[in-house]
Image (cartoon, rainbow, N blue to C red; front, side, top):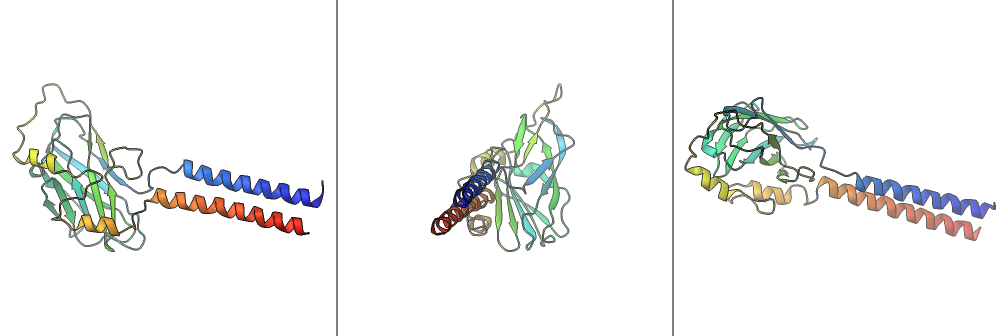
Length: 237
């Protein structure tokens, strides 16, 4: 095989390998690495006075988490939720559709862990807690997608079936208002909170998956350019 043929074959193999690697990167892009976890030792439908713990993972190495805004799932009224434990100096405030815990920024790169106590869990198989996580630099991560395979899934608590004889307590007057006021993934939260503005500015509007996809395209383009340069150089030799 001539030197020219060998050079062209090598360039073709390099281009194919680069494209395959980029494609694999795009196809395997799943949910963002960081997210919010929720758990409870008494995760059972209609259970009463249940402590629910949250672990908001940090996605920033330069700014600390300062606020967690949660939209409660249907069946849990803000008045039926009390604060448990959380970062030092953080305080709990009930909202129309959920609650907010906030305070001094935790250490940059550290998770924000806290818990609440729910008067009674609803008769459901799972509960999604849409969460807005704000940092000291104004950035807000929106963990609100109800699709668990999405890029920004809401934390979901799986519930066991209700115990035999368990009954639902009477709903509080604020429960209906809570359900109707809950924002969807496409709608900002009520204007009474500054989080809605922060989440449109903080991360430039691109998710982790989007940035990875852009990087993959750049890699493919670079591979193609390398092939063309080698081909022209071999032709002129």
